[in-house]
Picture 1: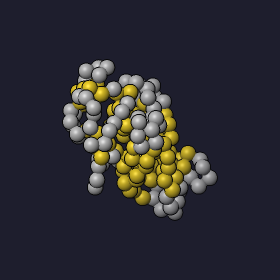
Picture 2: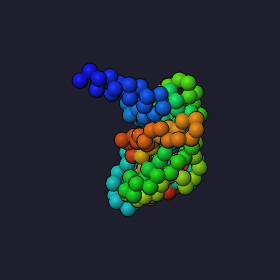
Picture 3: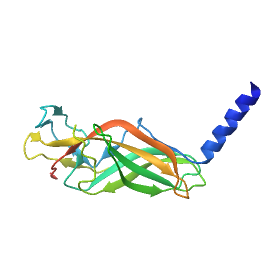
Picture 4: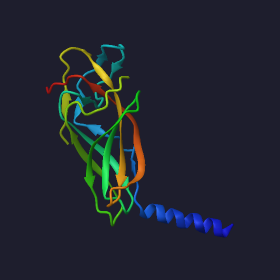
Amino acid sequence: MKKIALMALGLTGVLASCGGGTVNDSRPPTTDWQLAADVKDSATGQTIRKGTYVICDNANTTVQASASWAAGTERVELLARGVKSGTVKNLGYKTVNPANGGSSQLLFTFGPKMAPLSLNAQSITVNPITRNVKVLGYTNLGIQTRSANGTIVSAPSYSQYSFPVLETCTVS
């Protein structure tokens, strides 16, 4: 019994030394686009509440995500996954020191039309032209990590929060 426990402990150490990462949902991801008022999804009639962070399909979006990673990790990649289809896109990455594990609020900026559209400080606020908006879909953000040689060392870890992807946003 002791040998099995020691082997399991040894394997845990080996796996941790290879890197890995998670999204910290106690500090959920945010974007630089936030609704200034309640809006209604023109297709479903569902109300999306004031203060909701959104992704804008017609503009650059900056995401702030709280992530942690183990020693051995060299890259923390931001992924977006369509809620209905499961389509995944890699939106960018940050390089971290592989000698140390860590955690941080990471900023990623990606361009228009980057979020999967699988239908279903200072901030910029969304000021919809009308109270009805066209929601193209919803996406979850997550991270995966890679080692110095480019090997994926942790399966994607996704936030439980889903961001509405709006067709058009304007700055107020």
